Image 1 (cartoon, each protein chain N blue to C red):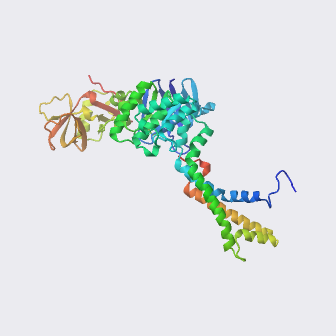
Image 2 (tube, chains in turn purple, orange; image 1 turned 90 degrees about the horizontal axis):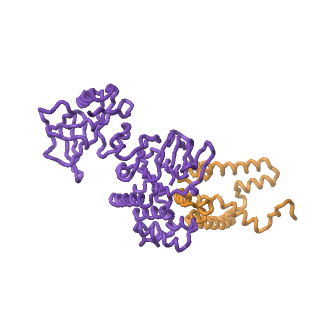
Image 3 (cartoon, rainbow over the protein chains, first blue to last red; image 1 turned 30 degrees about the horizontal axis):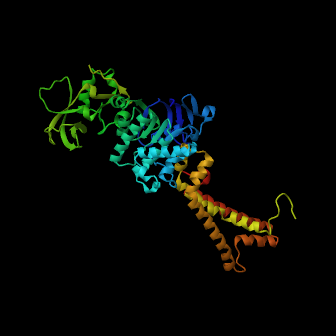
Length: 366
Length: 147
């Protein structure tokens, strides 16, 4: 599959703000690209524009060397000629066709021979575990089964580019886990390029080779999942990724924790006066009993344990620091009890510093 | 006698077929439109992504899914056509004026301007009614089938 290039893509539905605003994005061959963002951020619109179900208002979309949509040169290739597979959030199965006929439809259109078609339908339904429902109609299937039919229907024609629009959002958590593994396997096996839309950061982190975070139609950051998690480019991205969410400490509001962080960072950040807030991931913090002989060289926030919550394999500890609640995750509960005074110790590498405009600032960890 | 390219329809059975067709069209199409809106654009878009062009999509996806609603539209139109004829025959009494018969009567006695006014009134009522329903319910066919 050739590379997909979006250049300055803007979509406006004719009223109000741009649904997608000046988007530059390159999807390389073999990528599993996740478009991630809150609902209404323009990720579905982006996928629909790549599919050709929406026109771009400005900019251009290229698949390889071919321009498929560019209003400036009045170029538009309709979706049926783009050879792209799409799984809809609603699955959009055809209610009047059986499972086998749903899967067969695309093959029929491509004038594949009957024997070959039957073999392909058999293979696809087997692979996705829906062979026993071949003769049923979509309304007789559960959500998970319908989702697999939608996948089989797309995979049967082996498109080189697959677009998936929140395909797992209607499934229960166990099934979702299974289908996630299935998608990852399919991506490897078919060697296809996948563009996956989700508002679920966990899904994006586990599936994607690259993640594009969007907000209000504007692309925020593109990178590998760990890249984005470890080095969020702005406060929105830092806040959107992570469960429990990142803790923010505001500067310049005169809180003791703000003052402690500010004095710690004064020598470690260039232009420390521009710092607006500092984010700390829950797992970057360690909870320690207060040690009177602690070194003044490290950052420790004094607090009091508010609650200790089990989350299965780990614990989430809520601590009151000044007027603020700070969340920590840990594998060891230790002897902590509600009301215990503790130190929350933060290594310099665990600090995400943002300026007044919420952009990332670099911290000297040495 | 034929004047012009189209043969005169008055007095033929073709005009009855035509007039019932025309008369019932708005009601029949309404039921079709609401069924289309309920269906949404997804199934057709899915066919498009599978590589089906317009004709193919229409005949293999849209039409089969809509055939129930389509049949309902035809049957409803037929029944209401048959019914309306008999109702008028049974219930209309001499001296009862509908706007339409009133306009004919006015023309008959030579008040053509008054007759025109009545016709305009009928047209205005039909237009305002249809337009306001479309605005209130947001079901304008010109805006596509929704989705």
